[in-house]
Length: 148
Image (cartoon, rainbow, N blue to C red; front, side, top):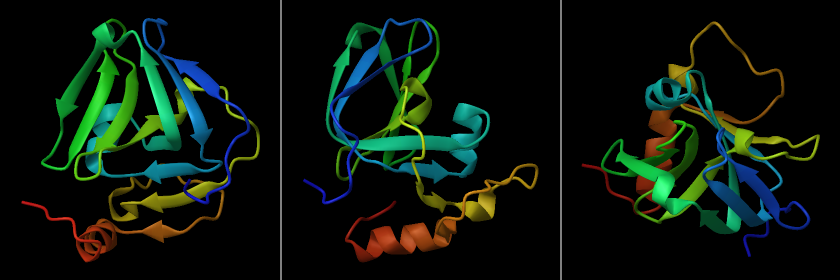
C-alpha cells in the first residue's frame, strides 16, 4: 500500500468505443497533471492521470503502445484512438487517463509537473504544487533513475 488516501471500492472505466475497459483497485484519491510538450501532443492539452495499486485491462487486443521516450510508454485504443495510460518504464508504474473513469467529486490535484512547458492559454484554478521539467528530472535522478 502506498499510504495515499484511496477511492473506496474498485472503479471501472473505458475508452470512447468501449473496446478497452480498465478496472482500478486502490485508486489514489488525487490527480496528477503533466504539462510537458509530449503530453500536450498526445492529449491535445494536458495529461490528467490517476494512479492505482492494482489494475485490470480487458480488451488488450485493442491496446497499442508507443515508446514516446527512453523512459515512457503511452497506450491507446487501436479502434477509437482514446489515450489509456502512461507507463514510466524504469518502475513499470502506470497512471491512467482520469477521463476514462467516473470519478468522485472533489479530488485534489497531487501536483502539476513540467509547468515550464505549460501554454499560457490555460490555467488550473486549484492551488497545487508546481514543478518545472528540470525539477522533475532532478528528482528522478536523485531517486536513482538514469536518462539517456
